[in-house]
View 1 (cartoon, helix red, strand yellow):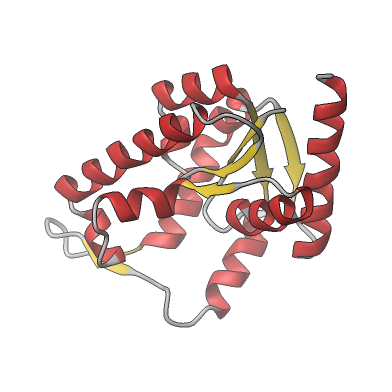
View 2 (view 1 turned 45 degrees about the horizontal axis):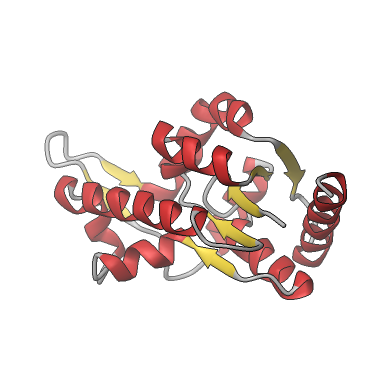
Length: 182
């Protein structure tokens, strides 16, 4: 029995692989981004970058991690990219389950983002007037924080192939972890 917290960069496959693996293993699946969005009545992705809303969203993410960590039984939990680096979140994840870093080659993510229509969010910095592509900014920030993800994780999964292959690798990793913990 165990909880498996998936951490990593946005678009690394945490939610996608987590849902697929949970279906195969017949585990419940939780996405702390979705849980937090419901808690703060999330209406627009652009709102998340206002300091007041951003803090509320991070607090809701922490609440979602605490809630899922306290549940009985097996579960796969996809975490928000930045909240998984918050020390209190790390403590709850570490004390209540296994942390799996879903790694994906940043070039693959950037290629996917270039081809995606309708989800690109560009903000203008009010002080400088410079436009910020938030998704590219998140990838850049991830590369800067890569060592933190590595230090937090108990296990690692390379997700540079198809979703099906990534999900099968995640299932094998979880099965191996459960067998070792019996």
